[in-house]
Picture 1 (tube, helix red, strand yellow):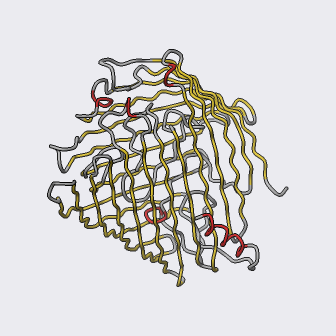
Picture 2 (cartoon, one colour):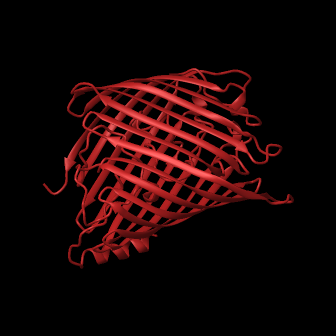
Picture 3 (cartoon, rainbow, N blue to C red):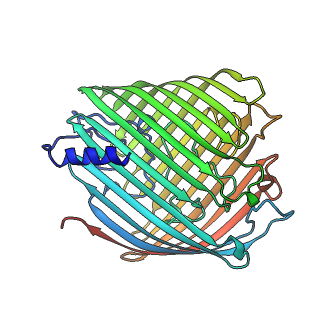
Length: 439
């Protein structure tokens, strides 16, 4: 992958400047380009915006430090008969680099973290969140994208921005980071590669490939959970049927495996999709179609069948308001579990800037997993919700206070049924600076 990126980097420095295929609706102005097509969220794989405002930044260096003090009434360790609470402190430095030209763009981000527990000192540890994205225009209307994201002990409780956990995705299928053991040590890596080619004024084709894995290095607090990996591929045809309307068809393949129990699930989806851009930063998408699934385990007969699959998503980013919503229903594997599940998953994220320096936000997530083999693997559900108030103290200095609730129920997973509810209150202070590049 590194050799491929270097090869395209050499080409980028020796070829004249070209124009570009537009990305998904995740920022920018309100005017839509009549020449270059957008790549709608269902096929781009991008997440909707998680900040208020429509300005899209480029060519910058960011660095900062976040300190978060919190109290959690249940650490969800799964190895006791009651809930254990503790005070937790997070120190999260971070640095980000974004550099773009009309031919290429690179984005790098790294945030190491240090977690200290007041009483449960054996859980003290470090976290890492690193990502790299590279975008290269190989012709006036073709673009290739490569990205990788690595996370170690990184979850919704210890983000460098404590209320921005990555946003609501517009792509079909559930997230591969279903949170089951929020405080357990885990390693997650996700790699993506894709290409979009606009071969006509109103026609585009493209494809995506993904691979990710989940690993629990310490199984003392993760009884009943398993390591796993996911391989996926998508090909699509998109047609612009109006200045702000897109329709098309996509084929998606997914394979989920879990080990050491060695279970496998494979899904083939054919989606028809429709996207309407009200503005460049306000879009609605719906997609659906038939899905064929198969699941098997060593020594047992294969289970397979057909089922309808559907997803809808909406993203709206304005000067004072941000809202993103997504819902999906399909058959899928589940990270940490084995087998296959009818998965219903919904997410909502919103923020309102009610004055120059004050904003309020809320988010909610719901996952319902109905196991296709309930005698072997547990089904269940997860609910998480939170709200916060953020205050801009001065340039570069911000403070936030918030509350989060987490509930889950999965039979056979001690961490998910001994004490299934966790509540968290936190105070976070962050300082950072922003420097434009090339000025």
